Length: 80
Ligand code: SF4
Image 1 (cartoon, rainbow, N blue to C red):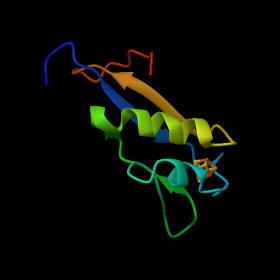
Image 2: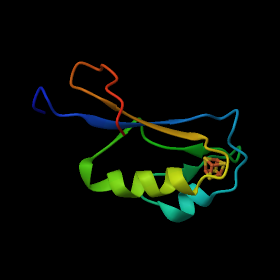
Image 3: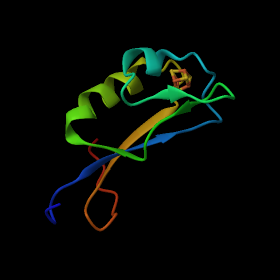
């Protein structure tokens, strides 16, 4: 990864997640539902899944999915 390359990172706020599963329905390659009914997602996604990750986040009625960008040093650069 180049120094200036940024990775889209995903955080699911389980305190907000109500298990509607809309994220997984919209973006099945990124989000899934665990045994307790909460959404789970990889900490970061490859570039080809970024659009899907965004669609899943937008689909969440509780805004439980937070997308952000981190650079190669792990610094949060925002602008997801
Ligand atoms: S759409 Fe939102 S509330 Fe529903 S499972 Fe996904 S993260 Fe949770």
